[in-house]
Length: 279
Image (cartoon, rainbow, N blue to C red):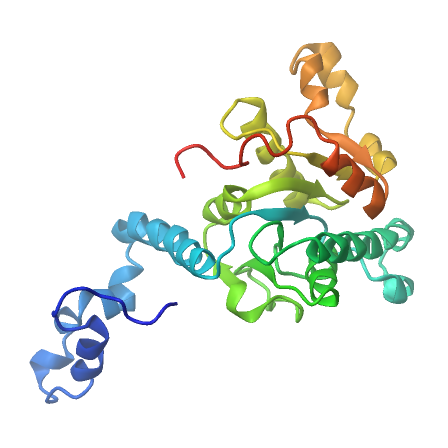
């Protein structure tokens, strides 16, 4: 965060947090009620404080990204289990091993996009984990650029991948706020093969665009065979549960070069910023 730029003479809250650690030890000062409300973890984690926690998770990354000068992003969604080609022999299934080529495509795509970035526009953002996410952050670093990681606390022990720019690496409790941050600055959305999490992110993004809750941006699905094997897109249209025009909201690509051509040639690209209305 930036240095203190307050325009008032009032005492800083950090000073009181520090001072409170040196108060006399009495039954009164040891009581939970005496803790400063904003420094009391037990209080902040109460169910009644959920609206406050939601606001904090929205605000903290927003301030940090603004202060880092990040104006727009290129979103990479994709599976955490997809291995790098060098590790494909350890994949739990042959399909995962075969999908390892998309690790390299994600890395190449992120590198090429970062080479075109000035550090403020089209910054790569991933979920900050392994697999395709790691490849995206790694590609940005290959180009000497910064990238964002939006990690989330999971039941099993995990950490962000080592390629995320440290000051742009965030941790979330709420999936909903995390997904909102993925899209608030999105200039393009690229979806690589993945599982439940990737499907959730893909369909929520498509729904926001379909319903006009988000500006239309280039929406690319890497690996046409994979996506057609697991989703019968035409059946949705034929059943009438989506319209035929909805199938034009996204485009299949196979490699990084195709993706960049698709972004550059996307109808309406650059006409309006891809943000959720109300930002």
